[in-house]
Image 1 (cartoon, rainbow, N blue to C red):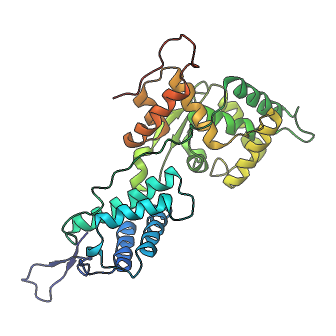
Image 2 (cartoon, rainbow, N blue to C red):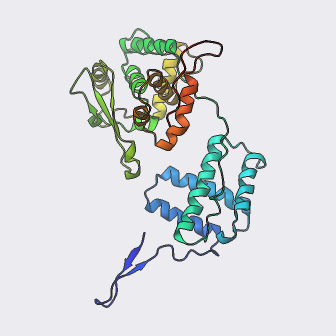
Length: 328
C-alpha cells in the first residue's frame, strides 16, 4: 500500500511514498521480518496468524544465525532448514506444524519478491511432501445416541442431584447439526439466531474480520431446538452472546456429558464437528454444499474430503457399494 505525500506547492502532483522503500537485498532478516509484520497488520490478518508467522520466521532466523541479508538466503538454505526442522532440530514437528512453517516461508519470500526487493522467490521451488496424519476421531451412531440420552437426562434433571440444565443439550445439538468450530460457537450472539419458524430455526455464523467474511453462512438447526433455546434462556438469562462464558467452561460441559454417556475418549468440539461432517457426507450431501456448511475454503476442502471418503469407507472384506469419491 502506498501513501501520498502532499506537496508544499499546490501545482505539483502528490508523490506516492512506498512504505517499504527501505527494504533492499542487503536488509538483515530481522528488519525484513519487522516490515512483514507491519504488512500483515495493515492487511488485517488475525493477531494469532501474525504471531504464528513471526514465530516461524524467528525459528528460521535462529537457524541461519548471524542475521543474514535477505538477498543471501537461497533455496538451498531453505531446503536445509526444512530438513533440519523435521529430522535434526530435536523437537517434534507435526505434519500440521511442518506445513504451516512451509507456508510461512512461501508467503514471506513471495511478498519480498512481489515488492521487487528480491529478484526471485527462493521459496517458490519448495514442495510440500504431505505426511499421512491420523484420521480424525468422530462419534459412531450408537455413541451419538448415548450422548443425546445423557444431555436429555441433564435437561430434565434425571442425571443431576441439583436442578435441570438445558445447556448441555443446547450445545451438543448445535454442534452436531451445524459442525461449527469452537471459535464460531463462542461468537454466536442471540441476534444471530432466527427462530421465526420454530420447526426450522436458523443460526447465522458471522465474522467481524473482513478477511474472514467468506466463511459467513446460515445454518439450519433441528426442529425442537427453539424450545431448548427458550429453556436455556430462562435458566441462564444470556443478554448478548449465546454462551456468555469461556470456551474452557463449555469444554467442561462436554467432558461431563462424555462421562455420563460412558465415553472414555471424551467428547470435544472438534469431534462433534467431524461427526457432523461424516453424517452429512454419508447421507450424500452435495460436496460443495458440505464444504460451505463447514466454512472451508476450496483448498482446505481438498484435504478434508479424502479424509471423509476414508472415514465412511466400508470395512475391508465386505462387499458393499463403493463410497463417494473425492470431487474433482
